[in-house]
Image (tube, rainbow, N blue to C red; front, top):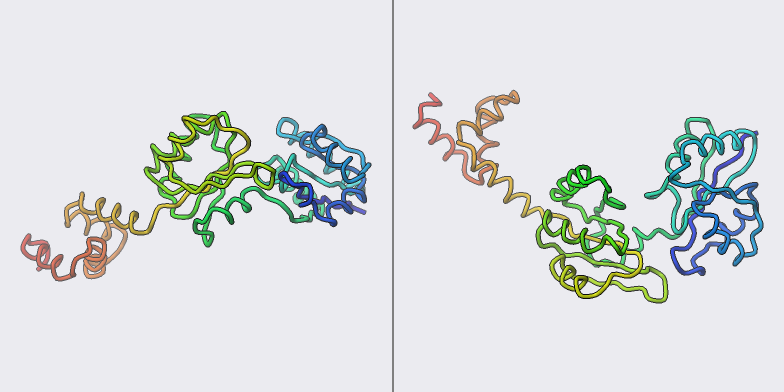
Length: 284
């Protein structure tokens, strides 16, 4: 009989956030796969859990995942824990989950703490629509591409950052996004938890004077619909009306429909577009 993989969320700082269900599961399973066994042993000792552990981390995630899937297929039940928070969120656990699915191994999640959701709810920014980016890529070219994408993002954005990279990341965000509201969350659920609603510019001024300490979650305001609309208008205005018409007609629109869309894009009446094209001899 195939075993089950349990994704067990662990506290991101405050040990009282550990759920009874996770404690019971960690005691019940045959093996705990932990991102860092040295960190996890302190958690297990606190809750008097004596289940054997094995390491599962970024540098062995593929080879070790295959091994763990084999053990699961052999009937063992395994719990996956990360250093803090929910496994498989910005975490090598996603590889193990995928291989379990491919291998017909049941996977279930025991919900609990997640720094990204905790910060989002504390941010004071819109929570109806949001995107989670995790840590920005280390590769400079890849990072530039991600930042370009984020510059057009209208949803609230959630990022993670380490203290020694914080100032540089704030500089890059300000350069690409311009002035935006941001809530900087530090040491969530811990003794020195800090939630700072501010702007990118003010955050930069602050952290150039104050040394960043602790782990950070950055919650950033998305581009407003009005900003996006103004950018669209500016891009259309760079085209002539004839080019604008040709753009839509090239997509298969008839002249009448294209004219309506051009007028809508430019924020003018359809008659104005018709009059221009008639005078220029583009319409009969």
